Image (tube, rainbow, N blue to C red; front, side, top):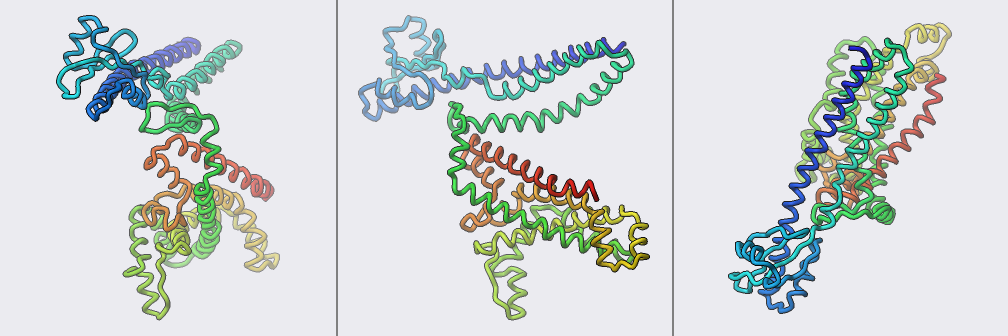
Length: 447
């Protein structure tokens, strides 16, 4: 099989897979839409009936109250319907009628069917589901790229075309994985940030920049952002400690492997277990830390219950867990420095501090940049320790951005607003990463 036929086969398989997926989702959405429509009609009829039972004589007013569920609702007298529809309604089940749905309306005794509630298809059910844009747009882009590659491949040699097709065939599965678990979720998050999206209402309107405007006026969000920035200060502290430990454990001393394992052990431990153990250690009444302070005659503190110490306590736990990982990275960097450089500096009469400052530290700049960038990104994404140890308290002193996003989405059910927070956090991390590369990247290249 030549390269052109192989590329054609890949295109056909891609089209069949994409078409089958879209057809399956369209059919599923259609069935789901019908179920939602039927439930909407039943809810409207029930609401109108309850209004009538409670003494509401004007059924139109009751129908007006029923419109809060997002459907076009009106009352229809039973005499205005034909015999077949009346017979179907007396079976006390919603029936389709033209472009709408009719639900039986019973009397105050909940015995006889005296009318019908006409429910039009809700606008939210007529709109295409949001996943359709999130799936169709990447598929369209990939299809356009495939067509461009096929068109440009006509000017290449047969061997070159075969190499390109083979390369893209190997890259196909990783690209699909990346699109499914990274590109599409990010695109969907951006899409949600421009909508009022919750799980309580079928209407999810486009609100433009309203979520971002509300975010700019939300004082609690800026408090969480400040707390997150303060928490991220653990990164330089941990880097200094990790570099010092790496320098100590880089020498050929007895038992250094055991010491490296002991320092590295907290990093590979379960974060949930670490959080629970340290929560007990910080306990104000029977915690190990306060017990040790009492034993030596010092004052105690409510470490996790005091707004002045709660965030510092979480930083201490983070430093304890992260210093082992950063020490291993610095050890790898130290062992990658050629020994001839240090030997030459020693011959020239450089002291240990001068060798560290003028030889070791400049050659470690790529490692320092890596640890700093990854540490800041991890610091702005802290969640588990805060969730386990303080739940954002006391008085929001440990409330961080990711925990605020979690609460807004899964406790307050405001997914659009939470998505706007996530987009802002992504942009801030992107800006911080660019600044770090600009400030340290040039020095790294010249080191």
